[in-house]
Structures are given as structure tokens and as C-alpha cells.
Amino acid sequence: MPEGYFGDYFTFGMFAGLVVVLVGGTLLLARLVRPRVDKDEKLSTYECGVDPIGGGWTQSTVRYYIFALLFVIFDVEAVFLFPWATVFEEIGIFAFIEMMIFIAILGLGLVYAWRKKVLEWI
Image (cartoon, rainbow, N blue to C red):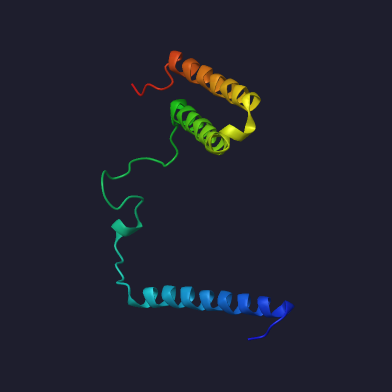
């Protein structure tokens, strides 16, 4: 194995080439071994369930997007809460107050969404 500055690149290149060969070989082998089924059902949009009628472009209700946005917001809240909780004792009372304000703002947003009945699916 080569050593030095370019030795690391050479080692990385060897492993990257090995990965490409293995993945490409596996995909090629799977293509050669797979069964070929040429039927109209395989070319339709759905292979099982109800047959599709009409075009694929339909309007979705706004509630799905709002629900997804609320999920992202509270997911980001969790991303901020976990690191804060791990260093809670070291950062002091000021950071505690800031986090309580952050949680209160998110809580107000949740109450607003609840009152507007965004979270109901009916």
C-alpha cells in the first residue's frame, strides 16, 4: 500500500472502485436473473387495489400541507430541545428562560391550529 499524502487517496479510490464494481455487478446480476413479465397490469399506475380512473392530477386539501408543516415545526423543536437538555445545568437560568419562551411560542401556535380545527380530519 502506498503511504504518505497520496496513499490515503489511493486507498479511498480503491475502496470506491470496489463499491462501484460490487453495486454494478449486483444490479447486472439481478437484471439477468429476474423474471420478465410483460403484461398491461405491470405498466399501469397501480398493480393492486382499485384501478385508476381519470388523470393523475388531483387537488389535495390544504389540511395535509398544514399538518405536514406542523409536523416539521415540532420536529425542529425536538432538534433544539435535546441538545439544550443535555447541557441544561451548564448554561444557566438565561438559557432556561429563552427555551421557555420558545416553547410558549410553539404552544401558542399549536393552540391557534387547534382552535382553527386544522388538526381535525373530518
